[in-house]
Image (cartoon, rainbow, N blue to C red; front, side):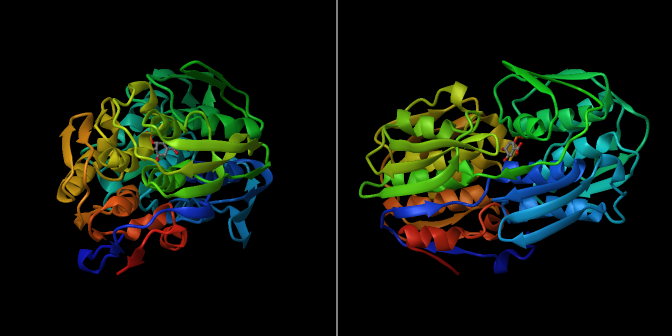
Length: 440
Ligand code: S3P
């Protein structure tokens, strides 16, 4: 996190251009966190390919190194994790720093909750504002000794204690992080852990745990798992992150003259909402060469640019595209007609309040947008040039950059350093595909 806003990275994106050619985006962030965690918890040597070498996942990797796990990095995106089982994890000498990563902190809290070690988990300014009561509450019900700062925010302090007891828990919000935290704590709890969710959320934890030999049962909105199961090392290939591909999918889909192929994109049914929402808006997206990789569906996407249409986004698709709404707001601004997003209040507790940041920024670019507690109403039309503030959020920064394709003037975007949390080579890849972007 850049602590000096005057020095923070700025993007200058000239108006116009189109996205063309063939690209591949970096590895999936959710899966990268889990691959290093599960490899470290397992017994044996886990080999990972396609690991995202972005700051968020690297903080998770460093957390396990701090706890004594040996992790080799023989090449770009490659890890060799020497796991000795969770009981071999050593108490970290210093606080574990998760940077900007809510996933790292919330999932690690689940891993550590049932162990006999003490640990403090901290993060950057953004993470220090994010709600942790959502995981602390169920972990306490399981018997964990865990505390937060006064407002239920980080740092988290865990004191190793008695064995946890499994719970049956209904999460109050659709959150894969909360579900995953409870399941990971459930691995060392006595009894069967059951989690019910209000809506479908990403199921990478369940899929990947199965790859590590754990018996996890999913049925509808319920997941169940017996405690006491051990992870066995495995090898896996992390596919390209659909959340990173989303900026390019939106950019190409909304910009006539674009014809872009994105190879090796993870298309897990719990993550593909952005493709389905864009198709409802009239986007021309084809999925080719569908296959499986690392227990996850993968395909190559081809996108041809068209004039999109505004829609009422079905609430059933919201949790399947939760990280893609900043980009979808830009698609809506380009569309003919009005787009209405509802049921997306979780956007307010991401790395920033994404509804607010996108509303403020798009309004500065002349877009007719009204925010609501759980979404926004966006009237498509012209996008002007101007200066917008990403507020240090990687996804808002990259979304505003794509808006320049259709803008009438240059868009400058403030506070873009955190793009490195999820997409280290964004500027090079985007400019290679035709976005007129430079760093300043
Ligand atoms: C994630 C789950 C989502 C998502 C985040 C990654 C994960 O958060 O927004 O970027 O890897 O489990 P919530 O589960 O809190 O919605």
